[in-house]
Image 1: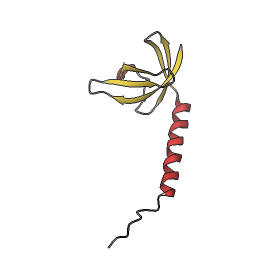
Image 2: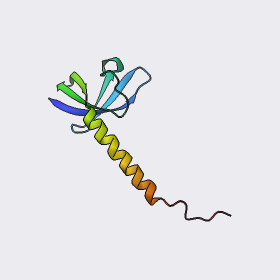
Image 3: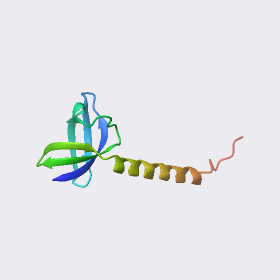
Image 4: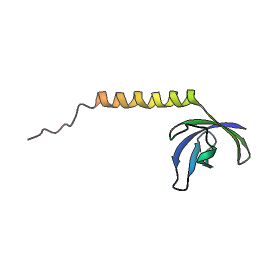
Length: 89
């Protein structure tokens, strides 16, 4: 089965925590098993067999798309924020 996952964080023991939202699963993968250059927030294409991750590929297109969407939302929030309603003395 194929699914996508995001690198949520890295543990102190050198593992990556992958969140596969579409199937509601979390996977712990050794950091050295990730594609070269993969970092927190990147999206991956996973090939699964049951609970076993058979292959991992970096999904650069999805990563760029999601990071762009986040930047766009942050920019909109900054535009709306005109500062504090309270006056300084």
